[in-house]
Amino acid sequence: MSLTTVFLLTVTVMVSLDPLILGDVGFQLSVAAVAGIGLMLFLVRAYRKPRQPALNFLFSIMLISLGATLATWPIVAYHFGMISLVNILANVLVVPVMPAVMLLAMLALVVNLFWPVAALGLGLLVHFLFIWMRWVTGWLSSWPGAYFDGVVILMRVIMIYYALLIFASALWLKKQGRSWREVWE
Image 1 (spheres, helix red, strand yellow):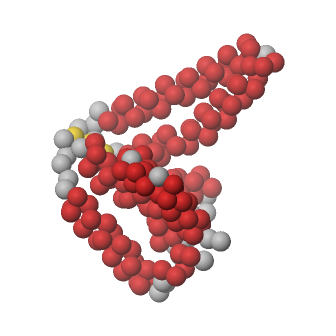
Image 2: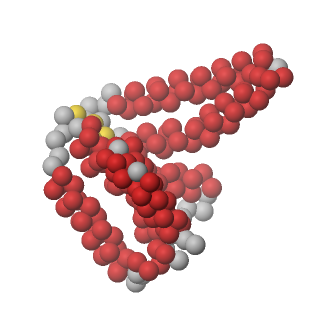
Image 3: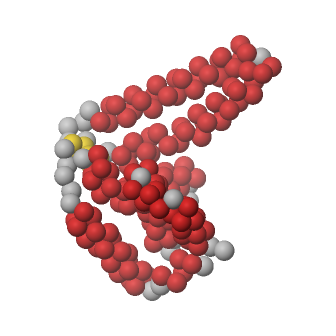
């Protein structure tokens, strides 16, 4: 079973169990982000990635951020009235730190059972990483023109945007000599 099938099946089951979830902003953003990431990775799969592991990692983060951003910005603008222009850079700087934060936090919980002082040290590391992430996002958001606030976007504009995104994706696939059927494989 392909990831696309699993994704659509999951969304279908969630909506079948609670149709009101369609109006939930978190659900809309999650579904759009996952679809955007999947589509972006599918569309660029035919291209070579950098050979250096560090560049490949950054390239992947940028593609993932770009896919999520392209898919979610209309929803964010509609519900929150904001469009960020620095979110991809923020993700490149912050996302690599998140696995360390999660691992250190889980480790601190386990270590706390046996050695509370060591767990405090691990918790302090998590705290400093959070401070760094907050500083980076605050610094980027302080840039002039980093984001637009008070944006009003109509639902028909969102529909047109997604239609154009699908059309552009179809053109990109045609240029590559690929089809949508490959999404299901």
